[in-house]
Length: 478
Image (cartoon, rainbow, N blue to C red; front, top):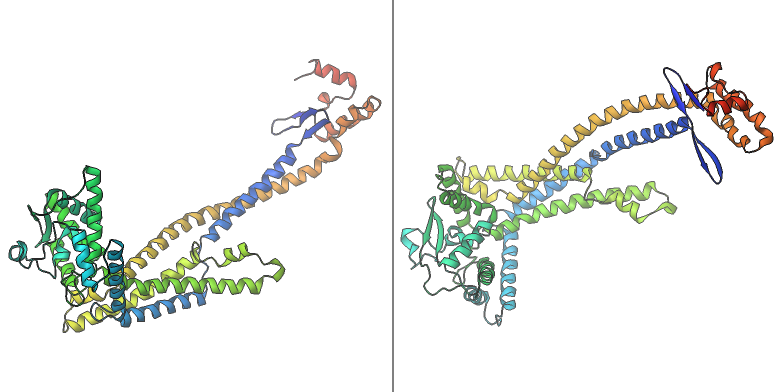
């Protein structure tokens, strides 16, 4: 059935199969499409809500309390090198791991920790281990047992430190950073020879020597007294990397670079090495655990209170209290780490002025500043900014979706009225009557009624069988 006017067109498709005939109503299809579109727009609005934090006052209070608690731990238990109860525990842990590694490499276990360190130094020998006392660099380059692990690039636990370690082992050199300059000693150790019969083998041996020697020095050298000078913190070792890279690229080293490097060296001499930076991880890790536990426990209790026992589900429960990938727990972590950093910065600043006698003591400030906490808070802030940008874009899309819903709902209402007006279910079944030859007259009557309902011009209405035959023969097609 075809009805064509200036402003509208309705086409009913007819499919024929062994079971009979079937009509496809465009109005019904439009109704389905409109409902599907409304569902899609509602899903868009819900997706915006899913990326927005849903913290209440108690969430914020608990997160801030966790930050305060961990700040107290950092101030009184972590403190600074040499005055850190937690640092003593960390030092002992690293020393035990060094002896464990020595046993793994063949140490017989006889003697104390110094014996294990001495075994590793011989096992993983390198050419850049000039300690200063009695060595070539003692006077010229100001190398001594308290700074050679920091100044020696091969002793830095960074990618550039690995590069210079392998370079020195291949060329029997020793590279240092001292006074804002990159210094290399030629033929640093006449007895050193890098093992390996091929380049890949030598590279592997060079990497093994670098890593093994770092482990041997992590708790100080075999001749160290007391705590010993470990390997530098990866965060502060990059000040050496900047000077080394600029020197290799013939870029002038600025006064700022040199001042920052001297500051890093001064706090290293006070005991701020990789062991103490590991100690600073403790309160930050505790803060992270407490916040995630608090979030999970609150949501778990809420789940059991609001869900009937017969509807309990492990998967749904985990989704309700999972503390890792949702914006609410991330907001709580931002508050917790922000509170922690505020306390840590305040303590470091006050003690820097007290130690400096009224002037700001930069070394004291950075000895007490928890770099790990600052780094973790920075990550949280970056996540908040990124999330805010995403939410702003999503909210704009959601506002547009709400307007679209109104339009589609109006369109849906119109389609519903149109469907009721045409009453398709009752009238378009006339084709079934064509199957029975005795009822073709009634079928023509239904066809005529349907054409009038579709507002087909009288001149184009097919009222009799001969009209239909003429139409299909092409006599009346316009």
